[in-house]
Length: 122
Image (cartoon, rainbow, N blue to C red; front, side, top):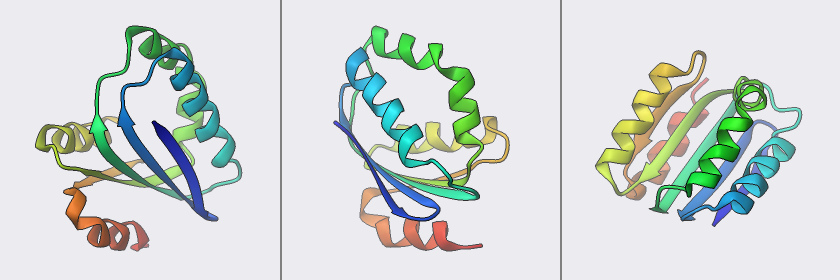
């Protein structure tokens, strides 16, 4: 499951759980691009409920769309990741170091209020 909600002019909330196959990945990426249209200096809140690695076909879809995903990610400045798994929080913050212009901070799922407050900091 991958649900994208546009909650304000500059924020997306994304809920992730389970495993994505190639069709699910296509739909997820299309939804992300569509719902982020017009966002500048954006914020994202990822709620990772039950993460499972995507299928190899899904990873192939994601890799094939890297150029458009780089353009998409440039719309955002901050992302908060909620997860109960420590390793996912660590990987998320490392990813933030690797993506220029995007600051990623990870939080335990119980710390949603703190994550939303961090996203709102200008």
